[in-house]
Length: 406
Image (cartoon, rainbow, N blue to C red; front, top):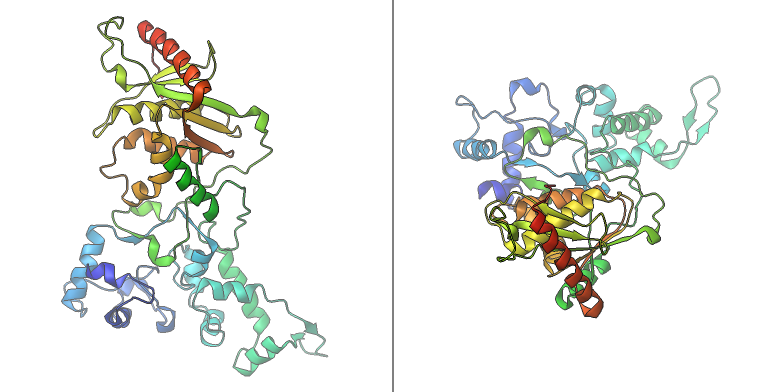
C-alpha cells in the first residue's frame, strides 16, 4: 500500500512521496554512473535504481518497499500509449532508452538542455525540436537566429541554440515507436469516441447492436500505467498496431450467426460427450463455411457464452482482416464480454474471469483486423428463422462427430 501511494503522481500524491523521491535520488547504485540530480524524476519511470542492498544507507522502510516492488514486478507497463502520455514521461534516463540515448544523457549539450532550456519531460524536447530558426547573415561569423526565443536563450547562457534544437530532435530520434510522441498515429476510424461508447452502453441495455473497440491505447495519464506482475521483457516490446485500414467495401460485409450446438440425447453418438462445448458458425443455409468448432474447456467455463465465443473466434480467424463482421448470437454474451466488461477484465489481468481462454483469443484476433466488428443478440422473426435453420444444420453436423478446433 505504501508503494501504491508512492506511485500516485497526480494532485492526490502524498507529501512524503516527494521526500522519498529526494532520498532515493541520493542513494543511486554505483553501476548507474554519474547521474545529474536535476535529471532525476522517479526510479519507476527512469532507467536508474536506488541502492537497496544491506549496506545501503537507504532507510529500511524504503528498502522493504523496493523489495516488494521487485518481488511482484511492479513496473510502468502499457501496450500502447497515447501521445500525451508519451510526452509526459521524463526525457532523461528514459525507460525506453537504448545505449546511445543513455550516453547522450550526460553530454555537454544535454547539460545545456537541462540547465538553460529547462528540459525535463519529453514534451520539452518536442517543443525545442520543432523550433524553426530564422537565420541572419552574421558577416564573417556563423549565422545566428534572431528570433526572440533564441536571443533569450543566448542571454540565459546558451551559446548555440540551434545546436540545442538539433540535439533535442536527436534525442527524440533514439526513442522507439512505442515511446516517441512524434510517431504517426493517423486515426483509422475504428477507435470509438466517447459518444460511440455511450451508444454501446445503451445498446447493451436494450439488446441492440454494439461495436467492438480495438484500441489498446492508454489515455488516463502516466500513473494509470503502473502494473504489478509485469513480464519484464515486455516493457520495451513494440506496440500492438493493427494493419492500416485500406478500402473497406461494405458490400463484402459478413453477417454470421454464432450459437451453441444443440444437445440431442436421442441422436448423438456415445462418444459425443460435452456437445455443449461445441460452437456453431452459421453463414447461410447449406453454406460450406458453416462449421462446428470445439475448444478445450478451461476452469470457470460457462457453457452458453463459451459456445458463442469459440464460434466467433473460428469465424474471425477465417474472415479476411478487411471484411466488416457482424455477429449475431443467441444471447447478448458477446456484447457483454467484449464491449461492456472487456476493460474490467483486462484491468484484472483476466484473473478468475469465466471463459477467459476463448475470450482472450477472440479479442486478440479482432484487434488485428482493420475493419469494423459488431455484435447483437438475435431478435425478430428473420433472426429466429435463421437460428432454427442453424440449429438444424448444427444437429446434423453433430451426428457426424466432426468439430474442428480453432
